[in-house]
Amino acid sequence: MDTSNFSEYIAPTYEKSMIKVFSDLVLFNDNKYKFVDKKTGATEDYVDLNNALYCNKIYYQAFEKEGKTVLIPLDTSKKLVFKKKYTSAIGVEDAVILGDSNHFDVYINPDFQTPKLKNIAATNVLTSKMLNKAIKKTEEVSAFYGLDKILVYDSKFNLLKTYPKKVNNESKVKEVIAPNFVEMKAESNMATMVVPREFSTESKDDVTIITSISSSESFSIKGKYNINVYFMEGSDWIEIINEETKKSYIFRIDFYNKQRPIRKL
Image (cartoon, rainbow, N blue to C red; front, side, top):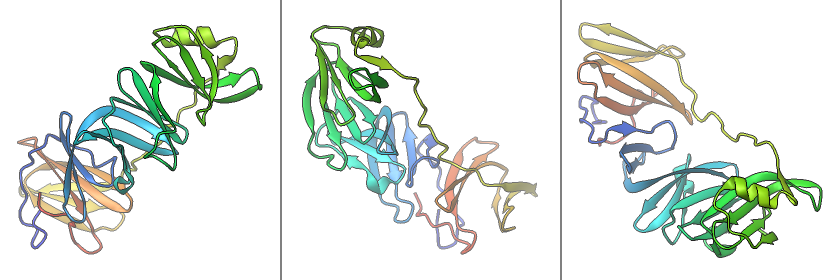
């Protein structure tokens, strides 16, 4: 958008957007992501690792940038950057388990730079709420497996028990550790991260008029468009889709100041 007169828009070079999830505007094609600061227009490029996790009551999406793993939350200013590239990321309460094909490192809040545990030999991890029969207490348990042993840790990643047995799937892990640990019913951590706002649209003389129902403020754009509207942190984000070309354009509306505070992309 040209914020001086709002008369121009630029055709997108990315196929999709993710304005509903992050505080930055996110554009992407396949696994190539571009994060755009909504205020400054500054951009950063990432490769999506197709891995989401929940840690320390925060949702993260895992990305790779310049050979490093980056976990990006809703508030992108609080992203976590790790010194190496991992292929998997798992959240366990206030800890993050990061791994490659045969090893895992464990980082615990607030120190996400120095791993508490390093190079745990395993190919997979089972994390679950389990009853620890020894202390008759339910706790979050992480069981590393897939090589020559099963290593079971508590939520603070203190080693609870070692089983000298190689297994290749979760059901076998549960079977082996059952004399000591019994899995409890899982609880979902999912939460609604987006709240839609109510807007109305009207087409008149090849112009689409979009109006905020709550404030009765409106703006118009030439052409026939369908819209999606999202609410995040007090901002109204509009996605308009041209009915003829099917191309979409996304920007933020500040009805109070009658501005669209985002740089031309």
